[in-house]
Image (tube, chains in turn brown, yellow):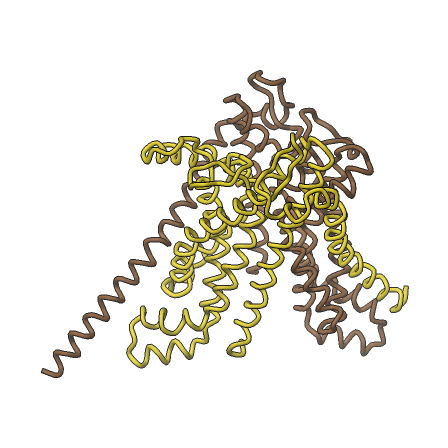
Length: 281
Length: 290
């Protein structure tokens, strides 16, 4: 008799267990399915507009079919190059500061500033850089867009570089110091090379993160229908083209927006995957 | 080069970072002064935003921001917790686990403007049909469309943070519970989730911070109406989306200044969510050594 009571109880618990399993598996499945759906739609819709002209032609005048988005591809590359030229040295030095002063009050303060910077909505970066750079220069420019993107990159790169610096074995540093090398030479010749791949990954991730940023570019790079190599003038970018084209009334432009989206996603994902496989090694 | 100069260089870079942040606050405060002076405290609670009559009250956008983020959280929390639990507790094969991880990372790295594009082409037509079914105005765009896509965008962060929180639960606790004969469900809901709850809650707050400041997808889907949203299907605007859609076409200096004020409000709200989230995160870590 007693035994049966336990058996009944166990059956109830078992049932609850199975019910719970289903209750978490189904939503998780929905999440995965949604992801596949979005990716598949980007790939299928985007692939339709990929052709030679898409990569090598400029935008055609409003309403005309054909042309491409070379102005946006070049623009995005120029913006990212500007951003990384600014962000890499500063994030390297700031990460070294955190590494050298680890645990001190100032370093902790800097760390929380970095964390707070990371949480700043990118649109806010856009309006501030507008008043810092665009207003004094009196024009939208690739330069201001690059500066805005560099601020998107900075906090992420600082914390990633800091982590890779901290993974350098202390014994390397101690051995070099014991040989009588001054601190700065130990950093430059031992710590930085040892953390090299981590720094490279941080750079890649900084690029991947900011390549798709649109909001900081709206009031800085602004967009440009023509191919431009002028850093002091407004410039196009892939995310700006997506935003602008999908708002337009032309089917051909909607199609190109999907193409630009595919291009952007492939670029960002291949950077991410490249970093992911490096990390595992 | 010597050690002193080297340290000075590092200190200089650190100062630059701090100045950038201080400069952000300073610039936003100074630039928003003209609008705040004109409107007074009504800038925060005024419900009219009219560039023509130059009346600027931020309330419709504060409500729009909180409403879209809240709805997105309501949708995203059950989905992300489930996905996190499955990845953290139910998947044993490391092969499947790494595939799921990659998938979640992929979703997390898709740019916001691409989600906006997807929302315009896929979500808006669906919501339009739904609106016609229930007899709401069939804009398609609006609060619900924006919130839905926002939810999809924060799911990857929330679920990977949930998974990490669960994986930080000491194996001994779990083993002990299994040894006592608890079922999987009892271990998860009775041991693992309570242990990880601070970190999970922190993950939710950090995702909220992202949702609050998310700009492009919301701008493309919310319909950009400058009035207080009254239903799921009404058009609206968030703090971020009104800046994105009106800043370049600012009708006057006060209009632009008012948008600087909106940016300041947005910055303060997201900073609060972030600080609160991070402090919970460190508390969660400290609970059991690590």
